[in-house]
Length: 151
Image (cartoon, rainbow, N blue to C red):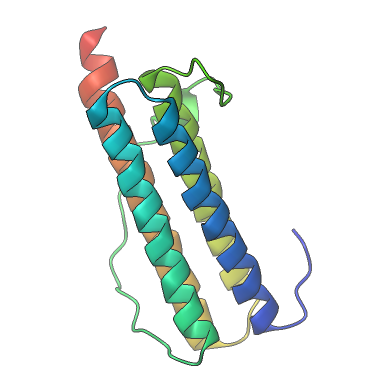
């Protein structure tokens, strides 16, 4: 992992990652051929925008109170073959890609939390890790409901 010299660098890095995640989901939405698929990924882009907004508030000096809940992990994404973004990406491949991306985001926030001595920032980063875990869980539930039920 990259070395950070300050909390400000951690927050700036996380803001960039959230912007990239929102862009990723917007791009996935454009690749889907069904309206409900497009909306699923557009909704995730909006949620990533919300994470970015939280981080920007922290950057501006406001410290929101993080929720304390832990999120269950079905680990479905842990056992799936990687998918690459492409123009002919189907819904199953898009879900796999999204699960993998959310798992990486969870790890990123957990790792970022471990490198700061600021307890308030650590709590916020761990809260964001849990939000990413919720996203992964939602993709896993969708995969279970749509893909695994068809097979």
